Amino acid sequence: MALVRSEYAGEFAVVAAWISALMPWSITYFRPAELSLELLVVRYGYFHLQFLLSGPLFDTRTFLPLHEAHGYVASNVRPAIAVAAVGAVALTLALVLSVVYYRAEARVESLPVDPVRLMGAILGVCGLLFLGATALLWENKAGTTVPLAPLFMIVFAVSLLRVDRG
Image (cartoon, rainbow, N blue to C red; front, side):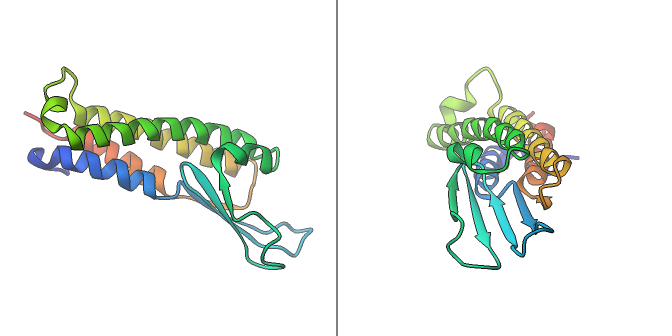
């Protein structure tokens, strides 16, 4: 049984891409034992937000674009950031497809590839990449990390891949 009716599959594909882009892929709470600091990091596809919960308010950069994050974070977190950067590229493909699909639905529907299934595949790749980045954060014990967007991306992908387009 499909979760989305076929007549709304295109609209759902567009909305799923934007929801995936707006949700953070992970939220990390970090409190090093040797320091009396608490840090909350909310990671989105293209940037990170860091909040120092204890100590001086402006001791850390709050907004960190993804291209700067690799050089700013600890070396054990860099592999996760690299995988997330690849996920951000895939997420960009999903967003481009969603904009093109929204603006020229009839043209996109006439292409030889089904845009709904293509969006499902792209969101599935995004979800797996961001889930892999989260696993790398867990492996490196970079605080308590909760994946958010990857779980939704995988549900969206399965829903879009299973929709009956007949």
